[in-house]
Length: 552
Ligand code: SF4
Image (tube, rainbow, N blue to C red; front, side, top):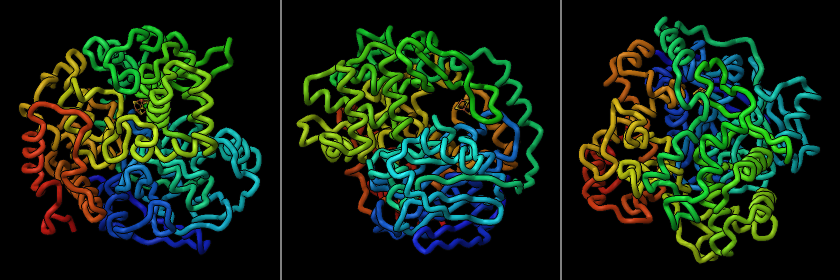
């Protein structure tokens, strides 16, 4: 089975030490990326670790496919105990850093300890250099990137950076790379912030020599020539359909259709797009560089999730206002989905939906933990009682846009996912929208056949995250192509995915997670039976992994 190569670089930022060690046995069993990081995290982070404690460890890892030139491979993985969910969580970012990371020759980098001053970690083929950067305290992401460029001639594509939100331990702070791409979900930026790490840079000339099967070129060609709507409008292309299906969360989830949808939909975003955007090596190029010269707003996106969170869910019907929110989140280093939903909760409490000035001001306050922003920085699950609004999260994770009240399989996925109400854990929604993925469609209503398929999709997506292969490759990555690329039977690959999901679940079980955490803030007919069926297929007892099933 294809897997990444190279040692693990462990950096103790408290002791200012580093060491490398072989992890070949882990690589052979877990491929790379999320799989390798999850296995290491499971075995090395104490089960009772404080997410903000020195004992928490943060892993960055690429996979074998970053040695290829295939489309859909400009991504990489980050893993740690999440300050938002309190469980083991992996997050995935695109952009251009993955290959610069691979050039250092390390399969994975592990960061532990906590520094007593703000530092940048410069990772090269030779290990790591520590640079104290008290001058960067409170610096935004663009300011930090400019410093690294000016002082070290290191480009944005070689950097992983936290903004003020990470430094201030906002529980949904992101790690930003290539300036506008985010390891967004789960607050891993705050984990770096708790370790007083402002940025990492990656530079080297030691990329592993991995023999990638020629079939990669077939996929690359199709990605380049296909006339796919996502190449023009990214993920926001689905917004009109979601709205028609009564599946567009609006006004902090109190409504499921938005009368202002035309102002924030795929056409609205496309009208502001000024060039193609992509991740390294990817001919699919689904990213959305947008700008509005009149108001001086320039950003990337918004994607569907952000157009929901800062658009319909906040009562905003002007795409430029959503772009502005997106730009602020990137600048301060915030997960734009969680930030948007948290702001929407605040707007609900204040009866201020659609108040753009208040929205933008609140984003800034959250990042700086000023005034009401200090409470909101704790996230909806911890602050909803004070706001007197419902808790629209699962395991503390804010909902993505794909509406589980309409797409019931996606609802089940939100409930059981180890990282909470996130859409990319299984990407189940793609099978429930009519006309989107006709080849593999389910009736959105009900659970017939879905628990079994959900288990397969979770396992398959864990393989993608380990490869690392972008999940938007779904129309091109057939089981036969997985087999050709990874040199293993599809079932064997799904078994790897199963081990990854099981290790995450076992880690979280040790922290007290069980069936009571696999819930939704709404009722779906047949949900409890579907949940039971899911557990039976997984072999879990009320959401708990039996000891004998914990992968070695
Ligand atoms: S499909 Fe889009 S998100 Fe995925 S790697 Fe390509 S450009 Fe990046």
